[in-house]
Length: 320
Ligand code: AMP
Ligand code: MG
Image 1 (cartoon, protein in one colour):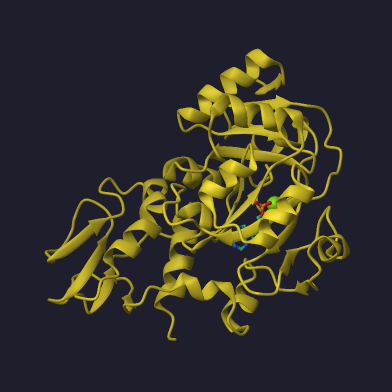
Image 2: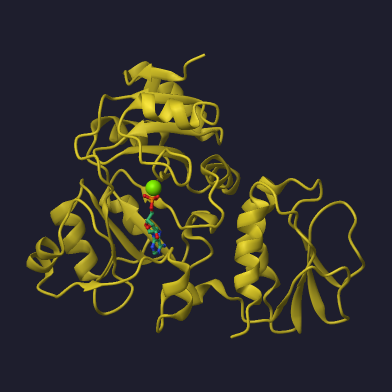
């Protein structure tokens, strides 16, 4: 049965209810169709990664209804506020530090201290944000490696079985993704070109824009100087495929059979990989304490989200 429904008020209200229950809804933005989920709900964010089938966790853009909502989630410098006032609602995503009490899932930031925020200009996207009262994670609604969807039919074709509903707002006006600009360092850095040009950004804040490799680019991230992926690593050493824990090691467990250890957190007692992904970053952080000598991690199966989990763990365990 088709999941496509016209983006009328009654359907937007139904979609908002589904999102509040942690389900996924595809919605139109002015750039491309988004795969929306509650950005504060770890399980909903894990379901987005599972639906897209990416082999690694790339941080997701979080859509918000207002600058006030954005400023509760992230730390906005003067430049950030000026850019938001000038280009929002619109195709500019700002990467800023997560606020101290940021309630968003760590998975939406791929475990990092930053968050990517934007107010979309599409009236349906904005109506859904208002009706749900949620910040919505919304990567493009296509399976990993396929082209981005600009109609509801594209979404149905790629992800129809993964979403509760697809709100049909017609074809997207812009059709390419938003510009992603990092404001984490003194110099603004372009992580992805899009609807707003570097020249427009420079004109707005009077600063040159550095052209950076995207944070999702593993090669650049790991080897480039001072790149953002350094946030990926816990302070304590990480030991993979552990069948037991040393006396002062913390254990990150998976599944029902757990060896004895002083400090244990279980990613998923039932062996559910989506639950494990939802818990991954928060549990890694919780175990990364000064009194433990390291973090031993039990084997995680290489299927479904297990591939992305293992990718992330391999980076955490890589020699530094
Ligand atoms: P998508 O949500 O699929 O449209 O793409 C998100 C883009 O924004 C990717 O290129 C990410 O690398 C980038 N991005 C999202 N969140 C962050 C973040 N916290 N830090 C740096 N880049 C980010
Ligand atoms: Mg995409």
